[in-house]
Each structure stands twice: as structure tokens, then as C-alpha cells.
Image (cartoon, rainbow, N blue to C red; front, side):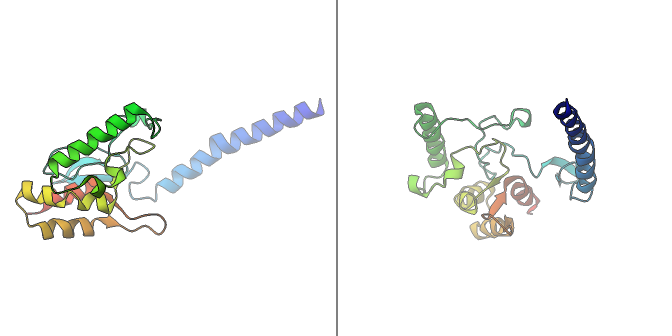
Length: 183
């Protein structure tokens, strides 16, 4: 009986702590973030075009392409494909992505393509690509937009984030908005 009462007390304390106090504290702390707890929005010409932390599909040749998504960029269904590197269906999908990249980037060799440009992230909604993933696209984007390659490469460099921990990354939405803002 004593153990049952202790278990009930512990359950009640943890319920109050984890279901009421913790969410309130986190929500309050979120109000001090960039998006005031609602996510950081990205705007172009005063119109919101997306969220900085949510991957979006970019597949037009005049834009930098996003990392592939296993869920079709559906935030409600965030997930990875769960297919291993020896799965024939997965290998076929990756090879198809490589072929598409090579079609639009004929100056590349298969070995030049960074893995993040042909494999989906664990969430399927990664908004970032590696700087190498952005650099291989500079020539294509510059040609389609009739811009100087150096100018587009400089834009990639300006939009490369260098976090305190972890690898450098480029947010594709921010980069494409900066590209659209070029005159």
C-alpha cells in the first residue's frame, strides 16, 4: 500500500512538472527567440515566403535546389525513408537523383556530388545543404539567371552559416530569397 501511494504521488508531481510547468517555461523562453516562438519567417518584398527551419522544394533551374525529402516536404508527415544503403529501391532512388543532378550540371562528375544533395535527411525536412552542395549549383544558377558566377558564388559564401558546433551549412530558402533580391 505504501508503494502504491508513493507511485501515485510521484505520478502527480511528474504530471504537474512535465505537463504544466515545463511547457509554460519553454513557451515563455520561446518568446525571446527570433520568431517569438512561432518560427523564423522569411519574407520577400514584404510577403512571407516560408519558414527558415522547414525545408521546401526548390527544383527550378534558376534556384538553388534543396536537399531531397523522403516525405515530399510535408511537415505533417516528417520522417526519414528508413531504407538502408543496401536497399535496391533506395539505391535506385539515389541513382535517379544523381542522374538528374548530372543532367543539369554536365560539368560535374559523380564523385563531385555531395551526399546531402542525393540523400534525404532523417526528418525529411532539412532546410539546409552543405556549402559544397551549394557550390556545385553556382554555375547552373548563374547561367539560368544570366549572372556572373563570381557574384553567385559570393552570395553562397555570404549565406553560409558557421555555427559554434557542427558543420557549416547553407539555408536554401534564405539563399534563394537573397538571389531573388539581387538586381
